[in-house]
Length: 162
Image (cartoon, rainbow, N blue to C red):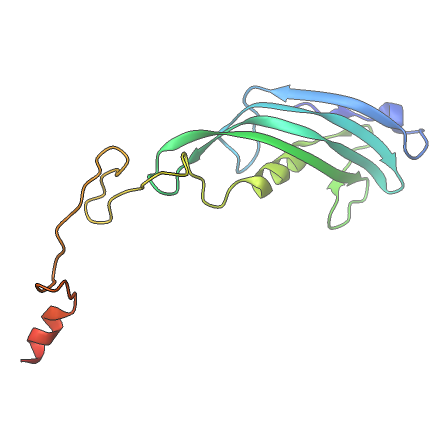
């Protein structure tokens, strides 16, 4: 992914801004290998400590459904606002002398907005706990094991006592 040229802002007053637009078909970001069609646009503004980069990020990432394990494409549409500085603090990204590399910021924004339990469909039935078949494709039930006539799963333990 290209860097953002900040040379026009180097001698600028605080508050002055510069628009940017970046895109990459298959960006290479650590820990985000299945990212496609990334587009970012927004403004870089001069602030006291460095630069504020704000805008939107769109793209598609390939995830795996937490219930049925099928891969699916998850659309991204994220807003961001992050600071860059020549000597970055804990919550700032490093700025170059003439360019800002947004890769680490994009990685951070994407990873912090991914769902904890991605689902290809909220109604996904998942996998059968007994045989592992996909319940979305083959809904079925298994007869209960180790139960007595009343459905008591502890019936075998009762027999051990006798």
